[in-house]
Amino acid sequence: MTALLEVEDVSKRFGGVTANNAISMAVAEGEIVGLIGPNGSGKTTLFNSIVGFHPVDGGSIRFQGEEISRLRVPEIARRGLLRTFQQTRVYRRMTCLQNMLISEPHEREGLAAMFARPQGAAAERGEELLEFVGLYAKRLLLAGDLSFGQQKLLEFAMALMNEPAMLLLDEPTAGINPTLINGLIERLKRANADLGITLLVIEHNMRVIMNLAQRIYCLAHGELLAEGRPEDIRNDRRVVDAYLGAH
Amino acid sequence: MSPLARRLAPLLAIGAVALVAPMLLPAFKTQLSFLWIMVCFALTWDIIGGQMGYNSFGNVLFLGVGMYLCAVVQRDAELGYFPGLFVGMALGAILAVAVAAVLGSGILGLRGHYFAIGTLGLGIAAGEIASGWDYIGAGSGLVTPQYPGDVDTRKMLFYYSSFALAAATFLTLRHIYGGRFGLAINAIRDDEDKAEAMGLRTTRYKTMAWCVSAVFLGVAGGIVGNMIGFIDPRDVAFAGPTFGVWMVLMAILGGRGTLWGPVVGAVVFHVTQELFWTYLLGWQRVALGLLIVVVVLFFPLGILGWLRERRPELFGHRVDEADGGARP
Image (cartoon, rainbow over the protein chains, first blue to last red):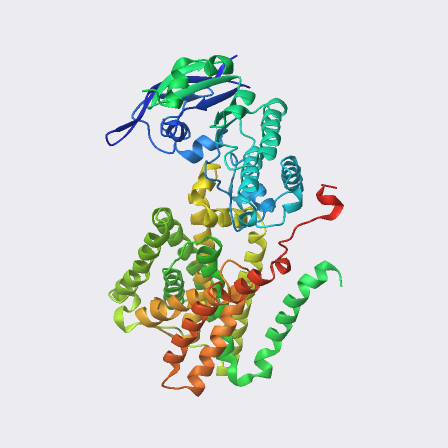
């Protein structure tokens, strides 16, 4: 297996705070990898660095073998590396179906495409994915009128519509009720298996991440603490200490 | 009625009324012409201010650019009246688009209030430049060429030009709002960071939106300049306090971010304004100010925005429970 995403010695400081200190990790194509750590350990900062939201202070990030640490958010997204947000972000005053239609991939977009009408095939695919996350009946509602959990599902469907090679999910199950969570884990696994999308997931819910991920990285205080299979991580003394605060 | 007929019926009805209006109300030809110009103003402002969520106070710049270029072509190109007018309007539109493209790639990088303030300066600066530039008449303005016929045909010509412009603006926007362009600028309005995170080329769409706005305003400039007959740099061409503010007001009054809102807003605004001038002379500005206060207090979303809030199903926002909510 070749590494799809390689993070090497990435550091990020905000003033005097070192949010990420020389972090290295690799995600292979087709994998589901978890990223855990106590609050404030630098998980979201690492996500932001990877997707180009802010420049890194040191280190290199390669996606599909190419250096992306100097590219900006939309360019990285168009290469097929997409993220979702911890606080859901959908287009609130557009209908769910419109949210899907504008999430089509944007690699090729000339003048003609900018003014083109959406094709029937796109609407078809949008509806298909809305049904996949269980929002088909709500497709004509404004996205802002959906509940928080439904907005998370919509955001996930929008990400799939974009046909990414890799998806970075920031706490996909936070704020979702337990019954829906099981369905979501199932859908994430299906997106990975059927659509071939590589996943890197930040998650606080241990039951979810242990079920979902094949490999887990654990951060604490901006440093990489441990890496391994879910059962190894669960039994790692340092990880348990970091979570329970034995420092 | 079939769905298509039901959608086209209001357009055809308005078109029919518009075509005979100057015959039915011969004394109001100029006011009616300005009504269509106002519709064009409100629609073009709403592309940026409503659909895209960027409050622009600088759109009047494109009007003035189109107006001056058209007049200069008419004055210097020696093409005869009608070819000169036509070529002038076309070149005016092209120059307005070029200005929008150049300024847009810089100013549209600003967001929110900063963009509004940035654009506020544009119209003012353009007015100052125009009033100091001798080639275009400086402070004493430009007079457009004499129309080679009688007064009444002149009025009819500009009435139908204004109507054609408003209709073209409306139909073009109706078409592109239904496509990827409309979706993209709505997405930028709702969450620009999200749009970028999804790979949308936001700057390209924003600049394009301003260019679309500029095309129609550039043509409107040619018409307005010739209709008024005299181009003053600050009071007609780059008239921020009147045209520039009215564009914003009309779109907000009717309901920003909707296709019909600016049309409704322009009609209501123009008619009330004319009525105030006729019946409340001396107090017309006060009445206009009160109208604005009432609108902002009671209809902050505008007339159509208020309607959409109360009756969302009229706008197609509903739960589809047919087939138990499953996809057919």
